Image (cartoon, rainbow, N blue to C red; front, top):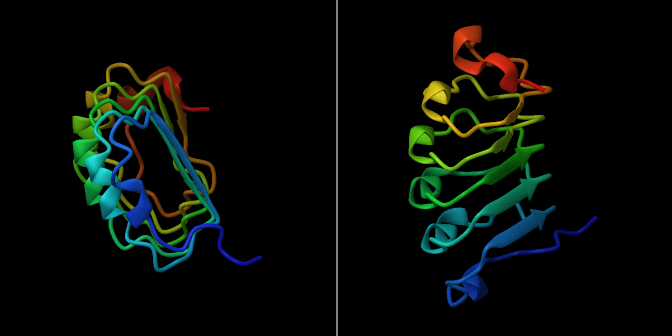
Length: 133
């Protein structure tokens, strides 16, 4: 199936966007443009093999739902602790994910999905408690 989205330049003017879903985007997409969407509350990225960086996430402090599923080369999510409004974190299928630090800083987290994250460093249960689904 060909990629649905091949670039994100068109999204920059949508500064009041609250929800965005990118399913089967092109592997060459530069996701850093999403960092300008400071009002974004829901972000779904799925079925892309290569994500060069998710550093843009640190500026999305209003995110309540973050789904990055089926992204096989994702190894870490830096600055996760800055997403303090996060209620859902779904990283299913991130087979290369090795670190998920600072989960305990996400005091509003209600659901955490790590299905298929076979290489992740073990997270102490005291950090995730009842959040794992």
